[in-house]
Length: 403
Image 1 (cartoon, rainbow, N blue to C red):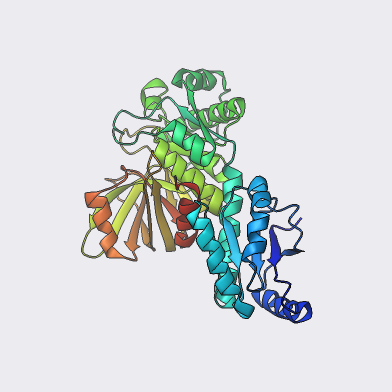
Image 2 (cartoon, rainbow, N blue to C red):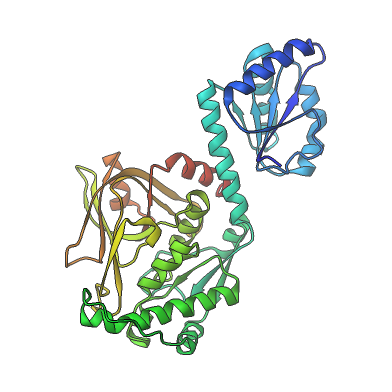
């Protein structure tokens, strides 16, 4: 079954052969892979994206008669596709006005073929991401770090809006799994420091233990109270998180649940969970910022180096070098009432000794957005994603997080 289905609304007053010719020309111009279902709405709501092509005017009553069936089959927004021919736009506006009056969501998709094709692509990608999120289980291993005083989460709202279950997992369970994981001795690498060579077997032990916890609880992702590992096992989770993120398990730092939710949404939408980072410096006049942290998903970097964890000087941290170019910064709040999205350019990667190991200098496309960070931020950590993803992120926030 194709991802996109197109259903039709047509007034009997219009000549079918003429309407069919317009339909063929219009749909062909979109260059979209779709299944044309005509006026058979029996499987409406079963595709990734269902479009109602309003082919002519005079179809408002037909839609009204169909509405009970459509509502019984789907609770998604109504997307009304129109070419503008034969008063179809006018009919679509009347239908959408009715839907809005009665509390239903909808949108008219109308414009030139390039706009319509782009819009359909965005809606399809967002719908697929929404389906990926359904039934997701995310772990909170060890509870949020003590310093995340503003990064609280509304678990009921997360389940209601995102269909995501947040699972509390005691830190002791992970520590037991680390103790049970076999130590895999590594050949000494002369390019690494003695302390890194000593720490590598323990870092891999943490990785194996986290994989076991993920499998035991059937998690799609987790956030880890990672600083507890510094005292408990004299090592860090930085390498484990980098590898797990690259393999498709969303893995966040410091027990930051809003950051974890942001990463999970981002991964469902783009395939990348993102770089969870601290904004370390901001130039409000130019819009240039530095983001830094001691781990980054390995599928986001061109190369990486191993170093110690910055604050403690122990364990294994990751200094990743991401490809320079377009990036997007993203964050949702723990109550899912706010979000932040900004596009920019990664100007360069740095390796200064006084910051967390992965360091990115990013130029915001709109320098005025630095005001958000300095006056009304959503916590500390933000998620950096490769590429300009703002249209997709704005759409998924609008579709999933609206109460």
